[in-house]
Image (cartoon, rainbow over the protein chains, first blue to last red):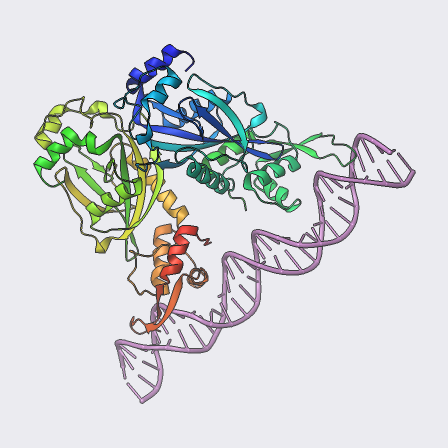
Length: 258
Length: 258
DNA sequence: AATTATTTAGTAAAAATTACTAAATAATAG
DNA sequence: CTATTATTTAGTAATTTTTACTAAATAATT
């Protein structure tokens, strides 16, 4: 949504193209060099920070809608995307606080309380993980800011988004041991130390420097290359790639890592 | 919903009391004497079997709405209830097949395609487990049948409910090892053999007759009583009860069983 | 050529799991 | 009243998995 005309059409006719009363919110985790960040945005008409989110087109599957949202924000397609919980407490959005004047000042549009936008909304939470250094953050006509925050220095979020982040992080950390991860977060060729660091950062735990890479290898998803990486005056580590086929199969059937 | 008048009000004014476009469906698992069953219903205007479900009141939290639904069907309150997934494929309900005449014959009401009921709906899936021998099944004005089916002899279900059952069963079997279960499924006082059989049936696996009860005990949720149960010409097993406090704590914080 | 920090193979110790054995038991049959 | 019986349950041995630790291999730099 880039132009004011598009936005006006969205406000007045959105209920014809989107499913009313239902939205989705995305906790997009970003990893890079042992840092874990979260993508947050600011809406024009809302003071604080929020998770990026949006509505679901009437022609879309849920995961397609989530993918569209993530792509619009980060420029990256086909991330690992997982539903983690649906949120529907009647007071979750505190829309009673909706102020017509604030909206008008922010958007230049008069939206009344009977608009399809101003009604109770149940929101489906998804999480995604990507390499934040590869993303190109995008704002749109309704968004003033869009930025990465360190996971340990998050501001207080609007609505129930604090709880969403808590749940998303929890689900991500559980699923870390039941799905293969790495695509989009590592270079195509990587060392065991690099993927080890990725798991340490995402899980928030120290993982044994010798044993954990062995466990990773035992999953059978990694292929050892003949190439090595030069890292200075030390033994050069081997490079690995994912065995695409086995990785895809593991995404479907799950894996068990301890 | 028991009277035609209530039903008419629901059809014409339901959108004022319920959140439109969103429903929930419940996979209610029933256990008794090593049998695992699933509760299914038949709607007046739909030919095949479905999961019981309904709409969410604008004043309700999601889990409250699910609880109301389960209680209305089984007569049992406060079951262990878990969200497992939200379903929103645009073609999930195939409502294009809606036939005004069929509806009129079944309900005595003329519902047109612009009714709030006849529009794309996203559905939140919950599962519950109870002792099916303790339930009192209820139909209402829209439901012609309500019955328990053996989990291995399920009929083909309407809409996407086959997939819902598959996902619910999968989530239930994973969560079996991360939440305490037993309340509502066992008598207040039970033997280790009885709870062992419960876990075998729910998980669908054989669990070692000597080791598994030891693992259960190791969770620290069971209190051994001085009483025993008479079971014929054999050694009498001890009776156990749940330590309510520890059980509640485990529901909140989770447990790990292998 | 020596130094260096890291990778990585290997193994020993500890813990957890699984498999198995057998004693304890209490109603029933004879 | 005793032998029989099938089940419960304590105990332990065998196996596997996990964790902790050691040290060799390595390659750019000094």
